[in-house]
Length: 375
Ligand SMILES: Cc1ncc(COP(=O)(O)O)c(C=O)c1O
Image 1 (cartoon, rainbow, N blue to C red):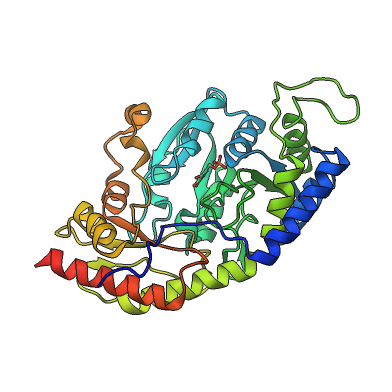
Image 2 (image 1 turned 90 degrees about the vertical axis):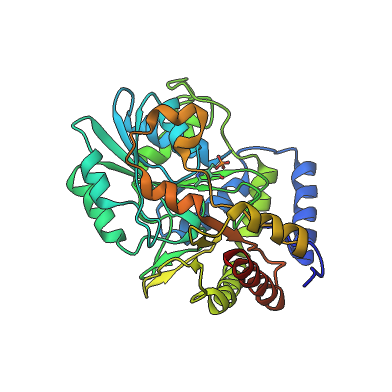
């Protein structure tokens, strides 16, 4: 098998008609001279609040900023925050930026969701918050137990929905679960504004704090500087791109689900591979489509074969965060499932330019290479 064309792992997609609309709206923004705090940020926020069934959405320059604002609102300084070890590094650095102590929690092998027993083991009298990530765009099937855990212990729940634009479970959308919910519009994400972020919440005081923090800490109403803020707002150009891209969310997520279905059909019972377990009410966004290789399959060799023989880019979900030099001291030796699952994970291309035939072809190539590497 040889690739018809190189297939990247991810690629932001703006259909031609949408690109035209965006270009003409950006022309109007430039002509107006209003590059910040204007109608596009408001429109984007309203659209996002609607999508996540929240009263408030505050646009920001990144998800990391949203996390940092939520954490400083809670006041995590000098206190403990539970964070999944299997996530993106800024879930941990945001806690440290806000002066808190991250405590890493392991995952469940079937779903990659937070391990409730490990949460229970790791909570301390000083724990005031926890971060919950919908890794790969799948919401945990035991989400109600996660919500209950946080509520019963009085923890402020920060939902990192950066992988989950458009995901839902039992009809409830990602971004509707946390006290604060944070999204990223980084270029690899399901939706992108170039870079950018959004914080959604039902707490009016948090929404106000976020609006003040993104504007140098300036108090609404008085204009006095009352917080150590920053210029963390999303400018009008990126808000315009994000607003229009969000209008495409339904189509883009449906396309991702179609690809996931084709991959699943070919690979679900393939020797040497395992897929995520999904509950019946789960509607993933499929930011990534991971397979998990049996221990005897050499992942590096498989990635290389997919690239050189088939022109297909693949990669692991993430390194476990505690493998990173700066976070090594957070490894308490208990994060074994995260290590095992992430070390054996392999994500297949997932974006609007992978069509049904590509998906079948990629899945067949993975299956053939796994067979070859297993022998
Ligand atoms: C789960 C998760 N959280 C946070 C971030 C950080 O997002 P941003 O680059 O918008 O700060 C990312 C980005 O890749 C992510 O995947």
